[in-house]
Image (cartoon, rainbow, N blue to C red; front, side, top):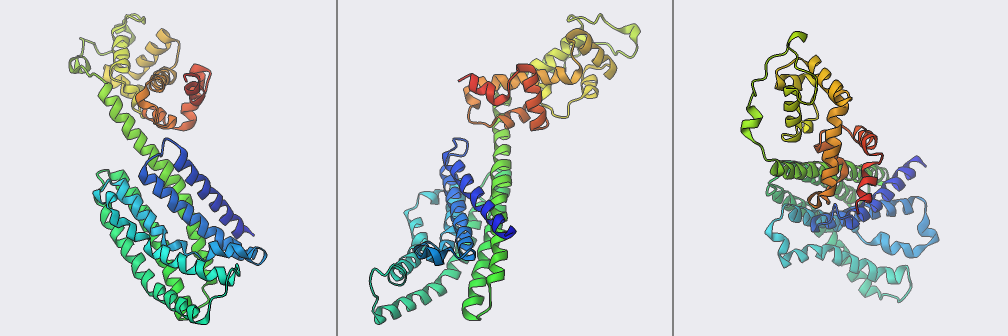
Length: 381
């Protein structure tokens, strides 16, 4: 039953993921629409296997209509359409693409026509017609393998048109996983039909691989890739908005080295080192560096890390980490209020503001504002 449970989890996740991709404004695009269709198709294939294992077709024979449609023939088509739309290739507008659906429609028509006799009993197909159907099915068996192999190769040829390294890597991995799945499935069908091998165990293993593909697409393909894309977009917007004054950035302002307490300036807001630190945070957003620490700041200011702590603690009443996180929270709040950032995820905004993890981001944000990032965003609507 563990096997069935794993399949059911994957099916549920696939359906939910497909709905999220189709409905969420974060993923709304023609490319992702076809990715959602591909995920739905894979989920349906797994559902058919579950129905077969629990013998639900004996109880509800009409469900065989769904099972007998070869959904595996349309899966590579959706992956192809996702790829050409994602890389924005002009072929996406070609009407010739419709021909890629012909093998699926061909087999679906034959199987439905046959099932209306054998399953639904709507009519009786004469023996002469029945023989023609068998011939058409046989023709389909010889057509489909080269079609699937061909469309997979054809799809791969378009991945190179992506101008984004992260995007190219994600599409290539998705293509590779789907290719392994489909080619293994074709091989199993050939072994079963022509060599009469018992492929039931192999198909179960293949189904488990299908669950992995759904899980991978959900986490690495959608969540991680979307996060990376969001961070890239946020970074570009922020860099565009920063007006860097080179003179201010590299000007020493005659700050002297501070190595001993004898050289210290008064620990007030007028302290030149504190003024420089404030400038680095406000004007140059050094807090966006997730690896920022006292040592790095001390090096920029030309003072010791201990003096950095003294400055921050005495003047602001915060320790260094809280001082920097306060700037990060304020940056997040500004982006939430800025309509240019409305389509980016809150986590991506937090990470681009310098937070190292979702936990640290939420904890720091709530400490400063009394609300979670999502509650704050909703309060501004």
